Length: 585
Image (cartoon, rainbow, N blue to C red; front, side, top):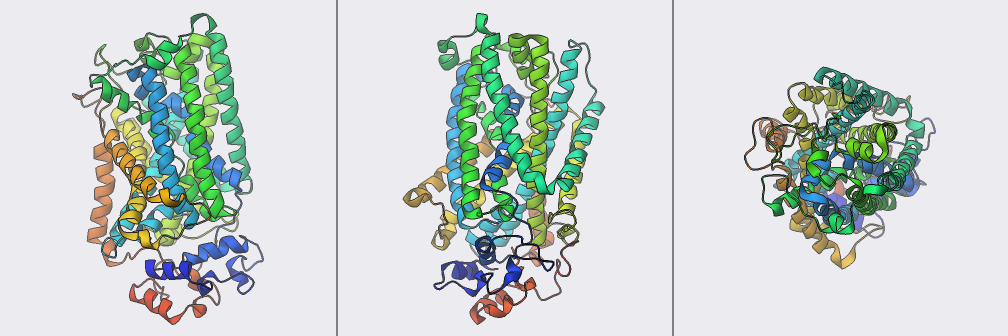
């Protein structure tokens, strides 16, 4: 549905026929075989955006929060990104986390405004199209959709690759550092992890929401165990408050101030799963409240708990930071290699394993690192679920290659986009082959997750305040008069985050092996999507497509003005477009 028609539908009084209350049209909430997919209110809100209900709403507010918090996987993610923050010293670690997390919370507020007003699985690209100018909306929508889709799959790659490294680090610790896994073995573990996630995401549909609750419990258990055990184990050698809160160091060749800013990359990567709440919108009960609450509570908990975790880590780690950075347990951090002033030797960065080992000994390190990789495994499962919903939504609107193939919903497996699940898993396996080339190539998986998603979050917020503020109708959650200032603050921070992610971590003169290839990878994503649009998609992609005509009686109830608006922009299907026909299997 076009932006104008959607705005008319949302603002009309009495409610527009697009709302199609289920007591007048039960097809909005119920499948032909009698399965109830959604409540009347949720189905009506989705109908305002031009979509019929196709996924079953199995997720409660707690479970929507759980999928975001699970993807963030707070302690495993901090463990995986200590190479960014340790070079800035303990003060850089602690205060960098606190400041950057506060900025991310502002981004969450801006996204919560949009997610409450217009909760749909393809929210980021849908909002971009809705708010952008007529001249730019199709292209920007297309670009955001690809950036978000590939960014989420890049996140899946980075999480599962991190799982493989952590899993193998436990073996390295058990063998006292006398064994080193090959690159091929790392990929095999990564491949098994991705495939197993695909199987679980396909078979555990009915309890997927409950699994998010389990993931939250395990995350909290790991966090509490760590903040209790580390200070006890390191009781005789804990660092004092001056070291924790005021010791700024610089183990890079950048100026000290910029080394402090690079420590922000840790929270930027860690607290990056909150948009999963948006992608689960069409499976969430009371989505207008569940989506913003999931976004803000997941960010808020990571902000506070992460701050405490880093204080504890700073108190218990070896004050000689090069010893921590240069540990030999072989658990790479984020697939990124870092050089320091001790030389251009590329380290494997097993920082968290080393910290556990120093405080708790070999057995303690083995126990905690085992729990860390279990939580990391659940992170990968959650992000595969979220990324598949984004890919499915994008295929529903005909934007992906083979959209008609990925479009169907599987009734057999519980009303999920089964083909989209396995499509995302397959692309992740292909991208994971980069890890076989070189560590710097593996690092590209992580850069894809950060910069591509930051861009996808930035554009709909920017489109709203630049072109479409007059179209914005607040939902159940709204930041009121602060909404526009919050949006501009979010835009500023996300722009800075994209630029920050492009910088080499170790210093301004990287070698080929220590180079940060974020700019190359994301230029390929954005450039490739732009080229595809110019050469082909501009001829047929017109933005999100209404699916309400697939629901009996709905199109007939549209006003003539609404039909004319849809026809003028080519958004009303004529029975010949891609995606027509049977949509379930």
